[in-house]
Structures are given as C-alpha cells and as structure tokens.
Image (tube, rainbow, N blue to C red):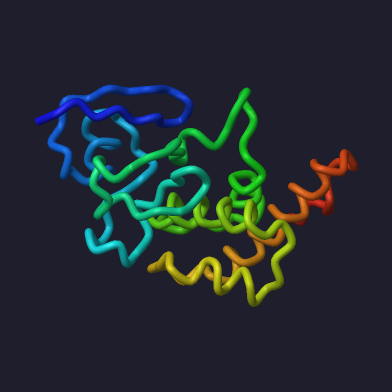
Length: 168
C-alpha cells in the first residue's frame, strides 16, 4: 500500500491504496462516486469512462499510479446547480433507456465536443463508437451530441438556446 494523490472533480484526495488498483475501484469504493460503472473490465464497453485532463479514459484498467491529471467523473460535470449542456441534451432528447452506459456516453461526448465543437454526424459516430449501448439508442445519442454542440455554441456566442424544444 502507498499514498496516492488524485485530483477528482476539483478536490484533492490522498488515499492509502495499492498503486496497481484500477482507478474505477478507487473512485467507486474509496470515494463513493457512482458515475463510472464496471461493465466489462477490459476497457471495451466504456461504462467506466472518466475524463483525465479532458481526455476520455477507461478507468477499469487504468492503475491509479498511472493517473496524472485532473479527473472528472459524471458527478463533476455540472456546476453551480446547472447541468452541463451534454447532460441537459441527454434529458431533452430522452437518450437513456436502461442507463447503464450513460456515464461513458456523456463523458465521451463531452471530450468529443471539447476537441471538436461542431462535429459532423460522421465525426459524432466515429467519436462515440467506443462506448457500447445495449439498448441501441445510438440515433438518440447522435442527436443529443448534435444538440449539445448547438447549445454549447449558443452559450459561447451569448445568443441563448440554439434550438427550439421538441416535445417527443
């Protein structure tokens, strides 16, 4: 066991854990965060995704000793009582069905939009293709990423909402 210091959602935590422990286990078991989930344990499904310095990373196979940077989990996206535009788009477009993959979907979408604020539909599909959804809500996910991109662009320009609300 050794002391490991992690910056998670704006807070610094020093923990006495084995340095080879996967980040996912530390986040869930030691810090009590429930956003990242155990899915496959092989970095293939994306349910365990977190952002490390804005880059989507799989936490189920990432040893805490290899984490160097600010970690953001689903719990850390919203601020000041406001949902992040990606989270709001997920709600507006009613993306989740079972919800198991949504942590990975939302964080991967945020990382994609931070890299490319105005992706094409093909770029969205490519950027999101590493997160598996058992419920097959891929078209809703694509629409929500597009709507989040529009909302983020409108926020950046100060013009307010970029689209009319659609009742489904």
